[in-house]
Image (tube, rainbow, N blue to C red; front, side, top):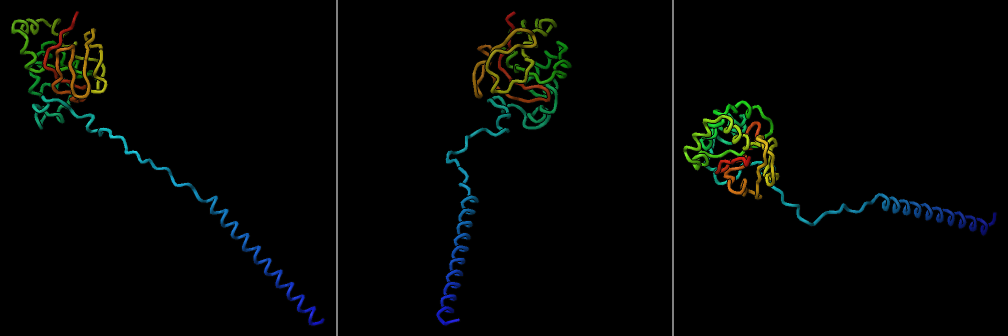
Length: 217
């Protein structure tokens, strides 16, 4: 074989090797680029808006109102203590409600209220009963049918959270009572103010009011 032919053959082989190397490198680069493109994902969208401020679960279930300060801090008559007992028993341990408890016992309603499930009780304070003329209060306490009618008018068959309190509500007595207001400011039938609300017992939600409610019928 001539020197010229050897040189030509060597040049062709070198060119082929170079071409093959360039092809392999190009293929690897393309594959890597394609893989990067297919494997890359757009960064997750993040919201710059601040999270909505919502009250904690604990805050939404706490009692509210100026008169709540008069409730004992501990013991059976405290909020924690009342939460362990059914409503008539819980009220008997609260010094604000002793007249109501006397009336409930006189009407024979203690067991009925204690066995009820998920009711709401509008509980008049001792001062609320003191607003009634003595002869009227004595007459009511002596008339079991009338007393039962009045007391069951203070109870609704549904557990009413503060957010659901405003509006008309059927009572166990049979007629409706009307609650107006919002937030932590409510009145019942236009003149009874909620002094301490959202008090929980084992079977009821209690709203302590400053006036005895009277059914219209």
